[in-house]
Amino acid sequence: MTDDFEKKWQESQINGWKNNKTEIVNFFQRFNLITSNLYDQVMGLEYGKMQVICYLLSKIRKVIKICDFLDTLEKENKEDVDVIKIFFLVSHAEITMNNFGFSGEKRKLVNKFFEPVAEKLKYEIQTSLGNGTKIKEISSSDILYKIRCEYAHEGNYTGKIFKNSSTEHNDAENLFSFKNDDKDIFGECGLTYQEFINIYMEALIDNIKKFSEAKD
Image (cartoon, helix red, strand yellow):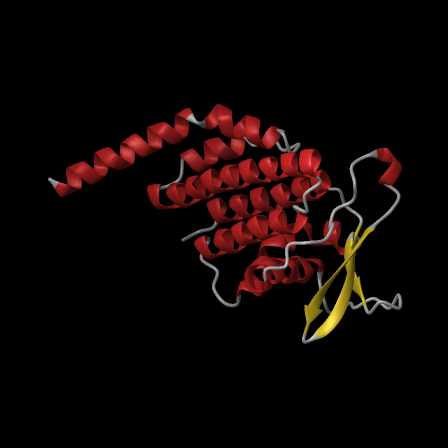
């Protein structure tokens, strides 16, 4: 009886996910990504893998709804929201790689998530000691993780990270700082939030492809 119930539950979930295809495809089109064939591929996987991916897709859609709300707060009330956006997105990156079977330090999970887009971030999110000297051993994904931890552990949510999307500010990089081994580290970002989120989603889709194609 239990097996029959579980089978019906799984079939109901699968049918629901299949019916969600148009919504998912339209969601990723917002980030200049074509996912129709990939979604069909996911729907052909065994239930366990399909469930992991579909749950993560549901979570990222919720994260983007939160980020959209934060955008409204920024535009209407001039609120600081960049750090909070990074917290939610980097946390989702951790969860993604953990669900895809990777283990270890959270920082390493974040690094693994951003591997597919490392070159795109490399020269856009950097750190220095404040005198112009670049700190090469701190990667872009490390910086994002440090910002996430500043919010999660220190409650620090202030500071503009992303470039302003208006054309008059697009030639200026945003400067920010964080603690690293009790030292003040200064960072600079040459991306708008929209540019960053497009890169983030590219990394997510690439990791989904790898997970769906991996042999068990």
